[in-house]
Image (cartoon, rainbow, N blue to C red; front, side):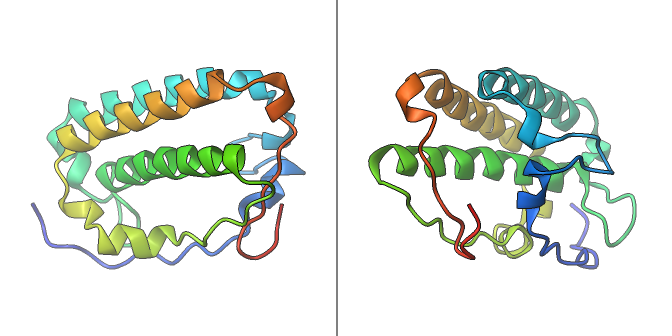
Length: 155
């Protein structure tokens, strides 16, 4: 694999704004997505990422030195599924837990996203998505009102 290029500009946005307005980049308004749709959307996204990761050896190449490669984005998506599943599990056993901060850029470097095997990332992403989707689909209506906070206090 090629050496790790320049590090992308860190993304330290407070992404909770997507709950109150539409994303200008992708058009998603997360606050309008019904909870019942999340599992299906996660399955579709996971299948698309598995296809991307296994379709071309070029997945390891960055389009620009400071932009992640498809492999790095795929590893990030895998870790988001793992993170969301762990956070959802915590919400089901604790009342209003506070989540530890997660720095995706730090994780990408520490875990060597650019050096990971695309096929392994694809397999792990599919498994992580499957676990998250199963936990989502097992939710009882009474559990849908449970709340949590980020480490910065945002709900």
